[in-house]
Image (tube, rainbow, N blue to C red; front, side, top):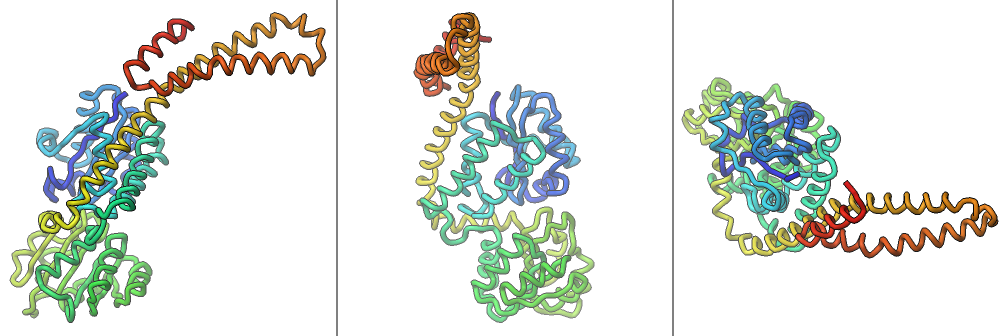
Length: 419
């Protein structure tokens, strides 16, 4: 059965589309169950981040699975299938494998080489395993994907310099307003993204940083870690009145800063405000950009900005692609050998049944022997069988996935009358 990937990412769909097809952590188990229950889908892993929503699947029929996944995306987003299709890409077998390896190594990210994606790939796989949606084939594939991501970052400099969305957001802010020295910065959200932003701000020497989070204890822990202040979520509007730079990165799933709130907060404020919204779905209503003195940037802007620094790590891309090529070949060989394993096991089972039957047939003669003698005869026969089967088993595994392997498998099935 083929491996396929069908999805949408920052290159094929705008943020407004990505946020509609994004699948939250809380709804992911139901989404995986829904996919796994469809006729043409045998295994599934869903990777849904701020830059992509992709379904990796082992399928019975490609076209049937493609239609089922389109319908699935339509159901979760409320978007008609006809409006989803122009944003979708699809790949299968070797190209799908290669695509996942490019994702895990950071080649397919908005920020080339970003480091956050490998953790997101791991999490997507672990959730799918917990739900029983990822089994033999995808478990092997995602194990390889994590190895590829690790190799890319340890054997090349692909993650040197800006290597995360959160760090890139801080650098983009600096590029827009200049130094952050003396600026009052508000970080809304203390999750993985928020921690990345706060860490990057500390690295860049920002002196007046306030962290705000719905769960105050988490906000307090992050603020203490980076030497920032902390404020309660109820003070959001008040904090907006005295902020120069806002970085919004919660997992709220809906707008938390709308036009009316910001209008009230900035009513008597003349200083400019830069908002960088890297949440998906977005935290900030895009209408706030209409307010005087307010500059709003989101993931679409960040992706375009990040292309400017592409040259810094572009020289590493070929090295990463070489690693991916090696790992795609290694995965294919490993997968083929695993596919040969059932045939080898079946062959051994048939031969073992013959050995057992023959030992039973000569039971009377063997009965004249002592237990030690019977065990010695049985051990000798087992050894002969093992030696005879060793070479064919190795040849079947080594040739698996090749035309020669198909011919050998067919011959074995015919000669031993295996189904």
